[in-house]
Image (cartoon, rainbow, N blue to C red):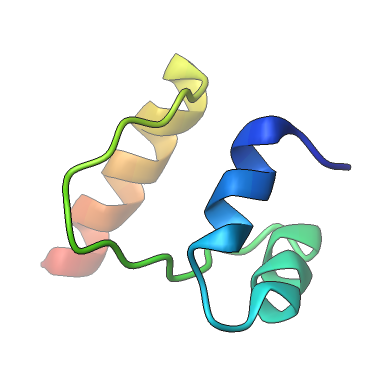
Length: 58
């Protein structure tokens, strides 16, 4: 499945296919940025991700 947001994120990584494989497996993928960016995302999914990142930080 593709969307303009996913396409844009994939254009920001050196190996977009690796990111797609991670997403297809329901996993996170590292997408780095050299500046602040805005991304549209589901509020519920964002909350789940933030909780997971907080858990990983402990």
